[in-house]
Image (cartoon, helix red, strand yellow):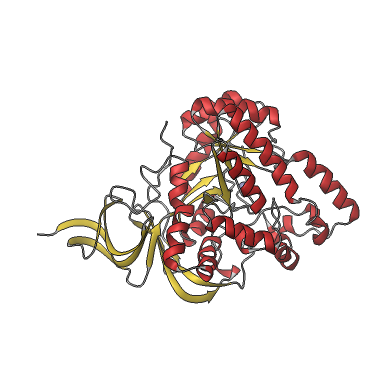
Length: 455
Ligand SMILES: [Zn+2]
């Protein structure tokens, strides 16, 4: 007699860290019960996935969904729906651009309540490290935040102050005691101020703006951050590293014994400064998009295994904040959590064969994220006993991406008209389909607040 389960996914090619395997997935109670060929289960629901690849659900460790507070910019419902349509099964929401910013336990509770009500996928919450809130890091850790985010330059919003080196040092010391990780936006404030003033004095157009945030800002900030990490013993995560030079610097620090991980974003691998000129403000972000040679250098670093994670840094804003004739005044932030990951996989497949590319990308988008943020006892791999978070993708069905398909609050993004060979066929969160055949499931099913385990 066959055993029974809730769901069986039949005939797919599974992407495992060790390579590609043709096998079925039996899912029960939201967990992967069994992986193997031609499983003899009686299932209440069957998904025929022949011809598709299944990767462990994408965990986007870097989004700004801006709720509570700035829901006119995005929102947990629209943001998580877009993420699900892009293959994401979980996100970590950043502490800023929501109001209040998440800088104490009370603001964690507010965001948690909103996300439990609105999110379509599982989620984690970043706390913030800002001047004067070191005594709140402990209570935030207790409330379950995934780590502490800080800005080494002006964050763009007044209520989330930048962490000067003194603040960073005190905060990282405390975070290390708590066994928590600190993430930094690495651009040096002093250089940012000087270079921006110099550039703005010369002009206000897009090409002049592109000279305002050279890579030296990133390198200077990384030097400062890795030194403090080494000194305090704190785990450091450098978000959105935009250059191969930045990756190299962070790797050197790691080789010297600092506990440093490196994130980059799809847009640094898919777009260049020429796209900012072409597209204008929808492609404006901090750090800015770099040259073609730096983009290719970043691919080289990624393929050599020197980058740990890829997050979207989905950072939306209303269109009227991106319409200034003075390019310097436009909001900086790229909306990318829906189209970025699929296009990244497509681009990677144009460079190397699937058997090489997919296991590596699956680690960057899920496995490494889960390990680094200590949620790998439940997520990050297709493995028996873990959450049945799945991203089903179809390769080799070329199509054109369109901003008209975006589920963001505002349909703006930098990938309109780009050709992709990858289609997100279905997204499954703990055994429940949240996106398939272009349709989003109704919200309202229970979602999980993901907390890191301690130690
Ligand atoms: Zn960000």
